[in-house]
Image 1 (cartoon, rainbow, N blue to C red):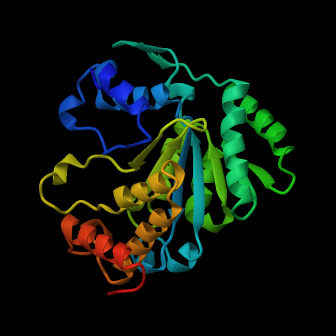
Image 2 (cartoon, one colour):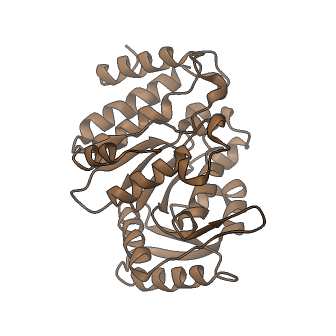
Length: 303
């Protein structure tokens, strides 16, 4: 099995779960219930981690690392909030050689709880939520849009707009500064957050936090995959995992001071030119990790 009952019980008893990337081509021919990704879905479901937070910021030190123009990127600061335990990923499935289906289901309660996470986040940011759906063709999206409208009434200080998912994909590349908090269902959020990884220059820069109800352990993991093609070479980008640790200290361990120190360490390391190959540099995984550790401990500046 991709994840054991013992592992799930230990995760439930913890304060937080730090998860490494999963997946390998050797498992690609496994049936769906035996793939590593199934274990990840089971962990999220078991812990009730229904809200996935994926911050996307175009850091000044990395503007040249992106394939997009600097004038498009400057000032980009987006928080993607993806519903994580509903939709097609968790619906009833039929899998065969001639026919297959994935049932996508959402309930009012599921949409309400993740929408509240988005609106509460927006209150502490720039006060805008953009909800993504495909309401012109999908019944689940029409429910999604209706419920989000209802929840918006509880937050009069937050502006709301709705964008179809195909348009959202376009705006992420053409005008990403238009977004503050981007609220999406499960499948759309998976795709859009991977697209958004190109804004800071690499998927290796994106952390995430998967959160449930208060008092339950969060799951913290990099957005990127396991990259088996570079395993053992010491060239993988550790920034996303390091930033996921910062989110863990902030959201689950009650140590925003530690989170801030880690984030400063990352910022100073990037300004000092510590980049792995995916960012156009030549530093190793260990080089970057040591640099972040040193400057996070120093507390300020390049020491």
